[in-house]
Amino acid sequence: MLLQGMAKSRPIFVCQNCGAITNRWQGRCDSCQDWNSIVEENPRLPPGVAKPGRGRPFDLEGLAGEGPAAPRLRTGIEEFDRVTGGGFVHGSVTLLGGEPGIGKSTLLIQACAELARRGSRVIYISGEEAVAQVRLRAGRLALADAPVELASATQVEDILATCSNGKRAALIVIDSIQTMHTESVDSAPGTVTQVRASAQALLRHGKSTGSSIMLVGHVTKDGQVAGPRVVEHMVDAVLSFEGDGAHHFRMLRASKNRFGPTGEIGVFEMTGLGLAQVPNPSALFLAGRDADAPGAAVLAGMEGQRPMLIEIQALVAPSSLGTPRRAVVGFDSNRLAMILAVLEAHGGLKLGAHDVYLNVAGGMRADEPAADLAAAAALISSLTGAPLPPTQVYFGEIGLSGAVRPVIHAGARLKEAGKLGFNRAVLSQGQQLNDEDKGAGVAPHQIADVAALVAEIAQAAPRRRGR
Ligand code: TYD
Ligand code: MG
Image 1 (spheres, protein in one colour):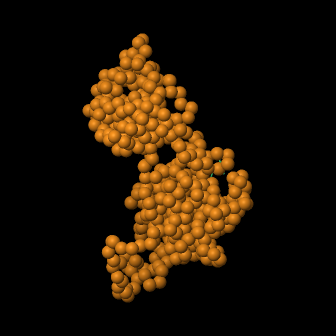
Image 2 (tube, helix red, strand yellow; image 1 turned 90 degrees about the vertical axis):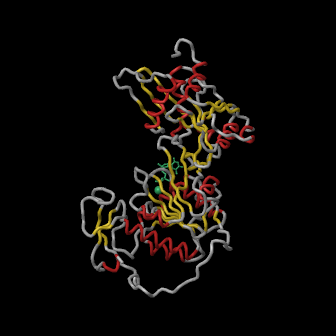
Image 3 (cartoon, helix red, strand yellow; image 1 turned 45 degrees about the vertical axis):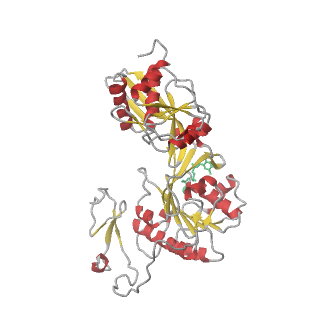
């Protein structure tokens, strides 16, 4: 009804951050409070939109019933296929988000080359790089022989006309959606309206031809796919490619997937020859660990559905400052503050005059509550100078009362620890373990609270430094 009431020639003003629409220009968006984000756009309504009462009824169906199993297009890159739920579904549209320079184009050209080598028609359209640049990269990755069809283009109608020529493409990569523009709307390239209309045109092409479409989207600092959050609603799957510029590993995860689970992650390492798969990430994250030094604890963590062992390092040192420093890398600073408070209140530790640093090794993030116990163990170990047993892992949530609480996926955590040669796990007394969990070769040591953890670690402390 909003559309009907609006005079067709009248411009609208769209916030490029959140997509809110206003009737006049303003310096600040009322909806998301962002400054200078509102841009004038001319909507051109598709013909027929405003004519009510012309619909034809259709049949409604029940939930149960036969449907063909969705055929999948596997790239052959295991870590990639795991995240998409076993390959792209034909005709599906996937958005791959990530910060500039993280390796999106590299990952996709590698996937395209794999597919093309196995006989699928694959089209790679770059709106950002010239064909020569893409070729140069492919050459460096030793993929130049793969029969991928390349072009540098930004005009959606031209792209679709090109893709409709010849055999149906199995996969069309659009790098990136922000550089695309379509004739169907007047707005400038890069605006919400353009991005949305371009994505819609590509989506229609995918659904009507059965070609899978992969859209690359740049992500802003705070992790949103820049501007067009709108695209996320339209596509079938949203993947994000993450990593830390200073480290070589990259993680691919699904935040939305209409055809598969969202908990899966894929791990890659950026090498001189492109992205290499990391089938055993725990081993990578624990490589180079100094197991005999105090202040390091191994967390038996989970990334989505996948168990992963991560080292948490703490440094607790007497402070020369009036207000001691607390610094974290890869850990939540509020959680650290809470753990320190609980260790003081219920563990009998004095930390008020100490600087505290907490670091998650390898550039990882330990965001789950299960990391509390490993962080606490690392802190106690650093304060007392007592190294933790090198073949021991920790997982458990710490409550404000000092109690150690159970967490999910205990079985998977124990199994992963066993696989990597760990033989003892410290966890909550309340954690229910079945026979299979106990059979992982990792002896569970179940504790009730942080006082028990402090007592156990202090036992091994060197006399003089024990506090
Ligand atoms: P790129 O795929 O262009 O990132 P995006 O498309 O996400 O912006 O990759 C960018 C970085 O990856 C670049 O800074 C160099 C690095 N890189 C390697 O380290 N090794 C390689 O083999 C390639 C191709 C890139
Ligand atoms: Mg790129």
